[in-house]
Amino acid sequence: MCAIARGMMASPKLLILDEPSLGLSPKWMDETFALVQRINAELGTTILLVEQNVAESLEVSDFGYVLQNGKVAIPGPSENLISDPFIHKAYLGLYNSNGV
Image (cartoon, rainbow, N blue to C red; front, top):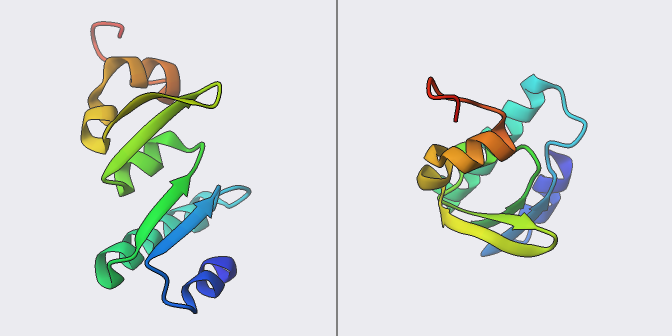
């Protein structure tokens, strides 16, 4: 949170966050993602979020890029990525009733 606050001191148009949830407890991870959403919504700051927590990231973002071997493999609106069966199986570990 301190690093995010320090980044916001200059009122940037773009805030780049690299793994802001790394090492945080679930409670603080939720707080961090809520803050990211709030900065975007209230201040209009564009946020580039690099994060391995796919589920949480897609919930707070408008658009996402799935990278494989350093290249963009799947770009798309977050709502499409969340509902994509491949994303669920490969990155979220979630399965629907069809086993996909």
